[in-house]
Length: 618
Image (spheres, rainbow, N blue to C red):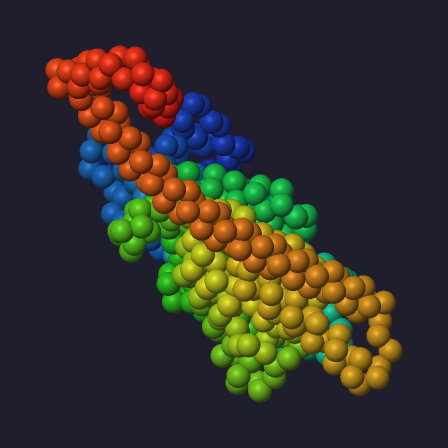
């Protein structure tokens, strides 16, 4: 930047081997041609031997006292005149020097009068280093502080690109860059140029995104200051929100996948795996802390307007905040923001994995021993915030209906969880008021999915689930499916068919043309009614036949008992007869009768009587 103006014409140097000082013209010291580097040291090429060593980091610089003391108040205050015999006893060690050894090399060249180039890359380190060395106008007109300040003011701050470059170079210059207001001035310059075309009038266009890419390369604290300054200058909330989403998509783990994938099913699982992969980096506290600070900073600068950021982005931020354990107050604020725009949510984004499914869940529910796959309590709180917001706005119907469909689709998704209890399902289904659902088809699908996933549900719990839906709000297709669904209780099936029959009769009673769907439904109802009547008749016939069979069985049992009694009496009579027959009395009577018959047989009358008697006995 030009030759140096010396504050004195002579320099006092100690001669090796004597105590006296000699005067040497300063121009001999400043007449150096270059610096020579040997390993970890820099040497000034000059005819005069060096009398000063300065260590900056791992590099040692061998230089002369005068060029430095004449421009640096810091070095000038040090007593550099040594009484030692060695030429190298005057040692200075600059700890925490801004910019390091590279910056000190440029300053050394400036002190020796060599030309230096100020650029957006080195001006911030040189400004901080010159402040460290106190290179003010008191020691030299046009000293390094005034030169770097002029370059910052007139060259850097008037250019968007140069301001970005300088701000990046300030990342390693804390706290010097902060104390010297370099960061604040650069952020204000960037914010002014960014908001110049983005004032809060008119619609947000893609042309207003021109500054997103370069701003997203900055670290989070600088980005926050730029966004805050841009909002203060009147930029549109949509522009601020779009820039925040762009930055979050670029730097947050898993956010890019979540914002660009609108598919169903696979995208949700890939996002969950991506977030969980970030969770596995628990062994890297620095990474987790960086992500947590990033999330909390982005949440803190979200514009209050509901149209500023999308509900999809807010839900993705909520998932990341849960993974990296963000501050509960910020998480609660984020849930309230989601409740304000819940009608714009997608069911895939609303499926928040239950990252507290480990020890916390077991401690909170020690008796269950199992945890759900999704964070249902968070969704329940979001729905409550939505209802509170709607109550304050005194608006319902359309948005409630959209949220009702969203909640029914969410219930259908979580119903596939085998660990989901009926109580949690019921509480979430009853979170919306009765009039929030114009049609209960989605709720019926969720109930049917739950019963299909939990086939062991008893009859009482089935009725408890089916009471959640209003059969009169089911469509014709849903009624047809429910009428043939064997997983539903019989009472619910009859209620569904009966409600549809009432609709058909009401349409006929009002003499309105009955649509083809209602006519078909009436035919289905008639056939179903006939089937029910025939089934009842068959059951009655079976009951009658069963009663007859029981009567016949009792009669047969009585006859069998009678036969058993007769068999016992007959067997006793035959046994007595055999005993009588074997007795001597029976044989003796037979013999006497035979003799008497023989005597009578001698006469005709007697033989005739005897013959008749035998015939009668036989």
